[in-house]
Image (cartoon, rainbow, N blue to C red; front, side, top):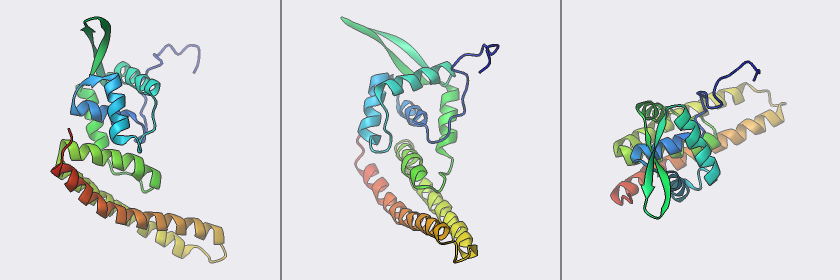
Amino acid sequence: MSASNTQSPYKIQYTGPLSPEFALLGLLAIKPTHGYNLYQRLITDLGQVWHISLSQTYNILNRLEAQGFIIGLQQDQAKRPARRQFQLTPAGLQRFQEWLSMPSYNSVRAIRVEFTSRLYFASLLNPPAGHQLIDAQIVETRAGIKRLEAVLDDLPTTQIFNRLGLELRLSQLNSILAWLDGCHRAVDNMNANPHL
């Protein structure tokens, strides 16, 4: 960054869809709450998906507030320090909704982190949307498999390690298809036993 650049360090950054900021925005779309509660909810419900510290959570919240996606309101407490309750702004809600409707890239990490997070929020906020999201990811994953199969077919048999790499990716995507079928049952179970 040049010395003449006087922009805020919190200028709008277009974070990739694998950022935990979307999980925090999603939790705030469910209901406004305090930073520590957001962190606890993220760890409780998505701790195997997102690995984030409390300090990272507050850093992301500060950046989102500086960018205008959330607002923090000071709340006084008797005999305790004041704390801030965060809520989405209209821009934050729009950012979250745009992310929620995007398909996930066909990689194990993107599906494990991004798709699972999207499915969590879609199922909580609009249960039928959870099933639609699964169906859309199945279509996307099948298309990804077809593309990789075409590449594999075109590779000479002498390119052993390129073929092995593609075969591994194909094996992972085929496993993901089976896992996606199980996601329908998981969403149905969650909707039958809501824990909110």
